[in-house]
Image (cartoon, rainbow, N blue to C red):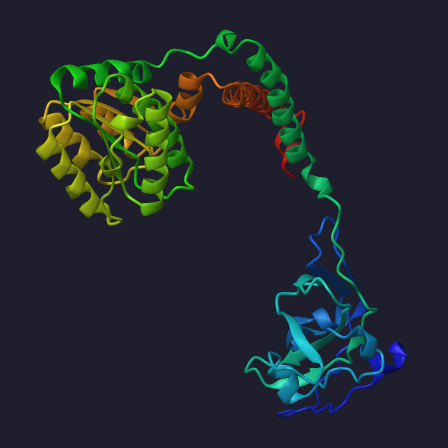
Length: 408
């Protein structure tokens, strides 16, 4: 049946300016199938062109590939109409056939994105035009067998990523029991910026002035905001123990709600719920420089003795840190934004750089799960460095490409 359809051309029309165009041979070996390692949303279409059709003197060639989504009726349906109008205006829909691709660079393959449910039949034919774009001739269409998209169980060429996941999971599984048995024996290098928090809170207590904590300028789901909120709990407990007022400035309302609950829990852990003042956890505004102006006003009015900036910051970082410097406050900052670190380093007394902020919660709490994740991350970084050194050495010696073995 497909052979009859392939040889049938409905509405074939040829427009020739001065001479009869040479016939165009049909494409051969047309095949449609689900590609390997696919997610179930693509069909791979391949075919071959005859040598006669590759002659540039015969005109400009374009291979038009059309798709029929209902494969059940495809074998009884007519192939796509070919003529001066339908072939050159190939973007249009012809009956049940819709365009899948226009191949004008000599390509003989394509990967078509389709719906995951359905069976598809493809028709391919070659159209020839002259240099002015005038239609000369078209080949008879070839019809493929029905194809169904299939999702692979896993991507066979990404086993390297699976190895990385297994390595990290194995490291975490190894360190969690160790951290639970003896969390104090898990070594984390000393971080002066974190150790200075308690001294800074003590200084605020001696001076009778509040502690200002800024949670950054990102929403609650940002990893830097989450790290900042974890540290806030420790700072709130310290201020409760020292009977020192803490004020928390927030950029987003949801961050304020979570921060207020964290501060409340910190006071509860210290047994000082009566000293907790919810109004001190403030939503300033969600406008960047208006937020900076609001916090600067807070610094100049209340004159906090300690300013702590942990989270994600942008262009307002120097405005905040410089204002705090002018008031003589002890300032401790931490962010993973590389562009803002120089400003904090210049204007603050202590600065946590990059991943130090993420490690602070484990450093302070000694919670086994956090410790295990931190140590597993450190070991994975060490393994990555060894992999890079070994890969560079093997590639330099032209022995083996480790990179393509892991990430093809």
